[in-house]
Image 1: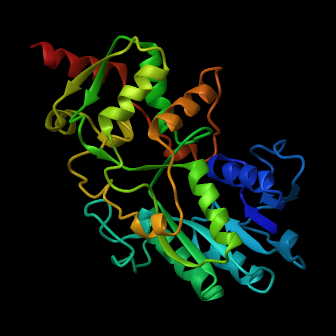
Image 2: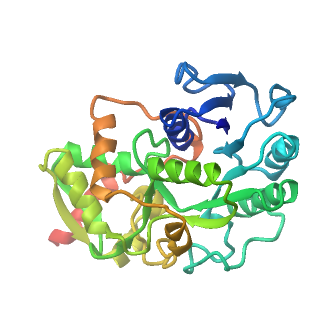
Image 3: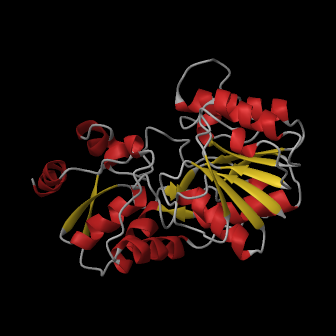
Length: 324
């Protein structure tokens, strides 16, 4: 299959390109040439900025498109309209944030989406979905991803925990350890999107592992283990963390924060029935550490939304409270 990947050099896009090439597809990557320009020399690289100029895509044909980096409906809609007559399938990476009530409440594919024109991440993703479907009705895959993890992650959520565990000592871990967790490895999401493109399967799917497929303590335990096992987890009461830590999910990324009960409550049943098969969480953790351990740097793409991590001072305060 001739495949166009919009993006294709950072995190999920990189996973899509790598998997597609491994399957023997003829891959074209459309990107700015700013990040990972030296990756995948066996692929065709078309350089351009989707926000200003789509002319490199004109007069071409592909079997399918996978759009990994669409955030504004004007740009996504322009690409979908241009490619409507040039490709049979358009796979768009959307987000659980497209749902009006997520992450405050659990959602499935029938849950209400944002409908307003707010220029915020969730409403914009919902508007992007509408733009794709309007351009290619019945031919668009809307992959509403939850929290994505794995090697080459650029937001720095799992990398922060791995580096903190590697540093050793007492680690403040917000409880409870049995809270359910729900992630998707970028490589599994990429493989599934390719399966769907190969089968020309359309529709909206929550592209995520099943709710409760693992728990928070398992992730932190795996991170501790793969980084050498010297860190000592000290569980801190969730209410204290929410009360004392500003922006707690940014400071303690991936935490199943109690005030967001729907965060890890996206139904993944429809995607599972369509073949999405997440790997064991420990494999994701171990592979991410194997990438990070030699000193890998996170890509600066979308660095404005990178997880900050808990400051040393804030962690010391939480640990001191346990001793008082």
